[in-house]
Image 1 (cartoon, rainbow, N blue to C red):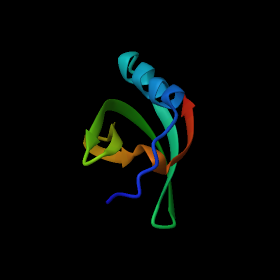
Image 2 (cartoon, rainbow, N blue to C red):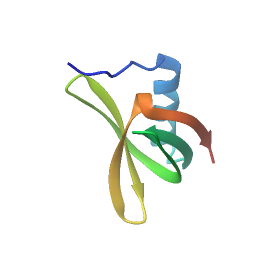
Image 3 (tube, helix red, strand yellow):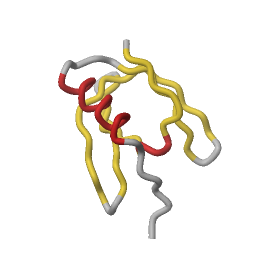
Image 4 (spheres, one colour):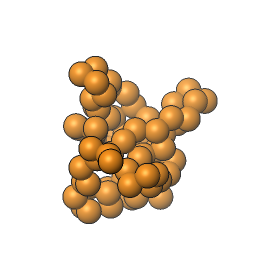
Length: 76
């Protein structure tokens, strides 16, 4: 069983719009009490095992962030 907490639809829509318009995002997210802050290009949204992820690109790398771990989003 996962501890994933679904995010509001309005926030999910915001990620979709950023992907469609290729808008970079400044994100702050927490994983295991570690805070990450990065400017990323959102690429896609995925659902795996009942959890939702934002697939991002940064410096030629691709990585995923679980949506319920994102604490702050600014569109650039």
